[in-house]
Image (cartoon, rainbow, N blue to C red; front, side, top):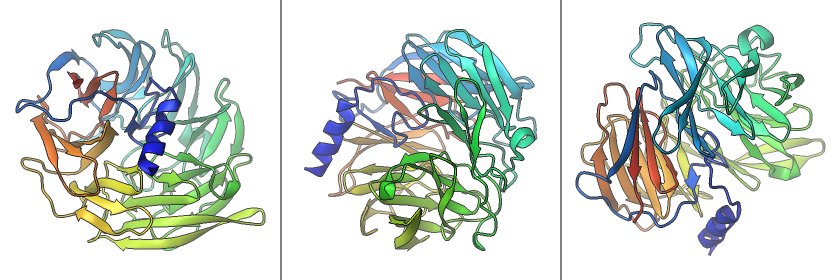
Length: 420
């Protein structure tokens, strides 16, 4: 009954768009129905393909008749708008330099966020840009390093997807003076900075992590939950006060997955041998206490990157550092219902995970897609195919919207028809 109520609630949102990172609620849950329950041996039919997006790992935002993403072309980094029906480029706006270092995985990681007539994006150098959704004209721009003293926890660059909440645009500079910052989404004028985040524990490293924040009403306080270099933080929405911190979940290399929240609870996991935790948030006067409900060590569950899905009373994810072994956990207890040692045929590396219409969409680092039933009863794979032209790690998160499966693969966008 809880699962039915959840899906009815999601459907009532009426969110036909996918306006940014992990969808309308940043949870990877699509409200699409009437989708294929299994795929043929060669995968679902290709509806269309677009080329020329540039290098990078950004996922997609879909709003109205446009698709928005990011890519490196030559020596510049761009925000792109494509036609929803065929992928034809509508506009491309430069927001900063390309990721030019010699690396196997350069290019933007963040996904644009669409709000009305505006599109927001964060570049790898920490440039925060507001663009006109119709024309791509730059309305305003900030620099996290220059304007907020921003820094990353480790060598990889800014990877965040911007957050919109009411009249605010939020992002994570990661400095002691501005752990996260809120600006007016229309003008870019600063509203507040969350000061602090230093010396909160021995785990992790100072600076921003590679995660994107989520909005929570836990303990009756509207707050932003973010995974930074020193672990999880809760920041009060009204004034930027840091309410709580949980350091045990941090590693000192890269804290990546986006947390999931429900009611008074926060679930998070990181890789590099760290693990996972469920926290309960309780009001304490003007503050909030974060109490550990359970901690899972790394052999039990760790998510390197690719994220996790909270569906009903269960967490579904890929388990393991640089692995995506499918697993199902009980949300409230951390008990493993199934998986953790399953290696789907042909799939290697971490898995980016999304959900739609009773199924999990696992996209593996080597470009193998798997369709898996979302059930706590056991593991059941119902489809598999290989994304074409995979030459870099296949990390971009899948999007399921309008009866289509959208898979960004570096310079290409593959769009598959997954309707029954």
